[in-house]
Length: 409
Image (tube, rainbow, N blue to C red; front, side, top):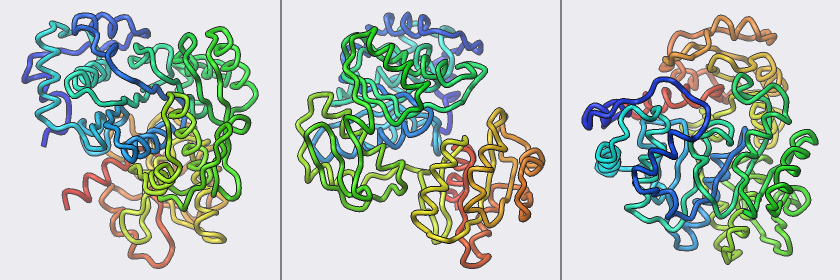
């Protein structure tokens, strides 16, 4: 197994640019050298603070159920780099990614791109060869200056807006919404999730400037009847119980359906219902052992959604949280969002250059039951403590470390 990009870079003698430069000019130049593979794809472009991965997972499942092939680009990696490029639901093979890096080498783009930009270009090369019916493209950070923002999509989707990456995207919801809305293209339909007024005004203004028709959750589409039906325009689609739990996943499912309808897909209600019921995304309230759950909540908005899911799935119960976070996140607000359902907090510093120190996290925790453990694998023993459920959360990088440990065992 090849765990990271360095193996491919060394094999093909490709160097990356360590300096992150705002803008898409370098990617555009690299793609021009490659023959612009991004122009030959049917893309649905997805941005947003939370909900991108889940919305893509629902679209992927619906497309599969209707007999279409798919390519997906997402981040971060769960087990290794191959997770970030999916083909028909499966991580890209080593042979396919090797072929894509060969193309990068032949095009002479060594030294032009950052690692993330290299992987973006490799994904486009892969899909040009394989020619999936649809490509579901997730932004890395923001939208306007993101390396994925080089496509003219069938539809643009903005799932949610919350404060994040303030050093890069701004300190207000309006500023962040402006970055996310950078994926809106002239006369291309836009589908957006629930928005606070400050974010909504910005997105509406940009959509109007671009003459892009806008579908807004709560107005043009919504879930009703305890999420048993989704109303999209004039369509009403009955939905069974989902594997992906929580009210926020009902919103993501509705966004996925609306996005595909905006892409002019003719959807079959029964197939949509089956796909929504069975769709699953790693680390979204995922039970990997009895009583042991993984959830990728890494900011206050996602933590609030997780707390609502717990209240819905385990009414009246408290859970034990095992947490590790990346530096720069709002620790106190994230923990406060989980407090109503927390029986205890356990903190750890996991292996990542940007991992927050467990000692700093515990200082920001006001819960009376809190402690620190030393390593990710200590988490595995926690389910033996009794009936209280355990949820590992705080960072997808932490969950990746834990899942890799479980896989190796």
